[in-house]
Image 1 (spheres, rainbow, N blue to C red):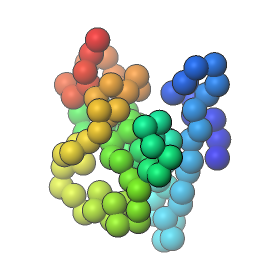
Image 2: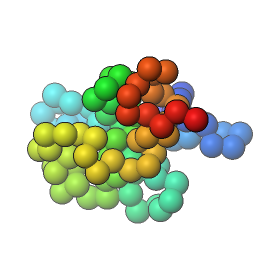
Image 3: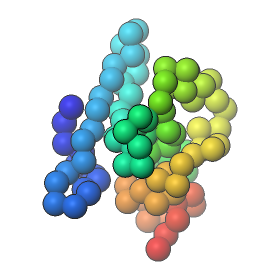
Image 4: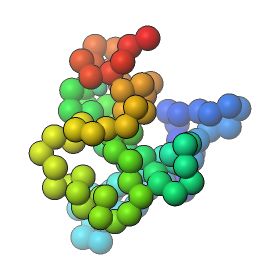
Length: 97
Ligand SMILES: [Zn+2]
């Protein structure tokens, strides 16, 4: 577990959890889902701007498997995907305020 350099909640940096695949081919990055203690938000590349953003809510290994098999990674993304500060300024998927 290391500090998340992108997301700060309050005065402390958010936690960032990195999990390596058993085959070592992919390292999955998660940040805590602030709405519930039971799930995490998976960080992966935004399909539009390739920034590392919270793209899927993951509670079980089956959720991760389903995400891995999907054709459109942004399909069904949580609100945090659209509002994440890591999106590039010209990203077409981010909700710019
Ligand atoms: Zn983006």
